[in-house]
Length: 568
Image 1 (spheres, rainbow, N blue to C red):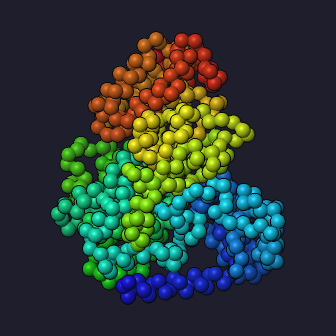
Image 2: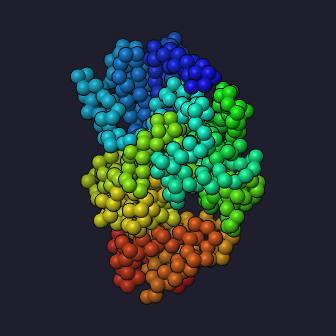
Image 3: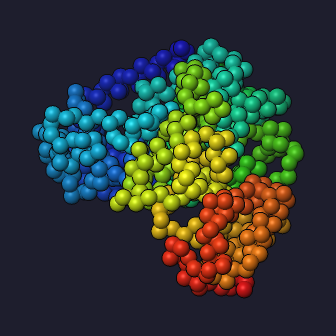
């Protein structure tokens, strides 16, 4: 351990000890908490503490993953277990402070019901929550537990241990080899081996090289990138510094979509605090390694998530993909060698370096190591974010942890991997969470978003909605994507309005395969995925719309949704 880091660690542990001696309230204020009214709950707790002159620590933490329970409050008294309260309103805060904080008597009837809490003889445990059972948390290890704006709390929880270990006793090549040995594959969608990707940049000469972190996250139904930034931004900052050390990079850029103020502000604060403690900048922790980092914002552009379009956006240009070669490792942002990684990918790295490759490689399947961070939305009892071992089946994740469809309903289909992913039928629920198995099933794991649909959803209408999104988000640079997306939307709208033609399914296939062959980037190359998978699992519904002029789900009405673009 370096002397500089030892001093920081001692400060952090002392502050943790001081914090543990006081009553503490944690309130989730990630996007899901804010949407549910968490800001008013925070204000109510602070007002109670002030009016009663209480030495109460009121912490705003990120997302524990239990989005269905927001605003989520947990109260921790010295020497007592944490008690969680779900869907707390500002009006309830007075009673919580009066009973739990002041008298030490939890309101058992308001405690999170899934913990089985109904009396004092049954103390609640976080791991006993239905949604937490079976999770293995690596990237999300601190989410919902530590204050994302307190760098010392991160350090006290083992944060920056990996960076200190690397700078005090490992060569850059050894860091890269540990990441390669872990089996970590990119979590942005392509699932390319991270160690191999880093090796490309290691071989590029030049004093200025960039590590770019992609947090554009425009997929409907995906919020784990934002969840990490809001809950534990330092795990990303540390992972980026380690990537810079391993590859010889000098600069890092965290690329975030404009308007996501929570993730943006917490990422900027983490960078600012890391600089203040000598964890960024010149001669980090007294070593000869130097690294600088910043946040770059992009406008509303889904295509900006493509790595070369991302670089164009950082340079202040329109988000449009570049021709390749040259590849980013040779000619990237500002013409300098660059390496682009998803935020989830980089967030695994600190634990891999701190505890060894086996902490990651020992979890998962033979070819898909580690964990998957999933976002569950749609017709699901417990929507939220979870980190589960690769190899767990979709059924286990959705039914055991997510609780299945509310009110005894059944799952009809899943939309996975974002709008360019695909649809899966209910007969595919036993597919394991594995990059290759998901691909064989006709979908992709992608960014981890899973939208659950019950029997009330029309597969044709959903496919039309997905393709409408893809058409709207096409940057328009290449002809096959620009016109192909529009053409497929027109055909799907025609089918939804019961004006489909006998050859429309063949037409969709011809347009989609042409897009895949001729498009410049993944937006067009993968653009046919939603249609192809929908036809594979729900071909009968398409035929019912075209031949019988009816919607089996009763969703489509026979009227054009966008008549100005539809063709008869």
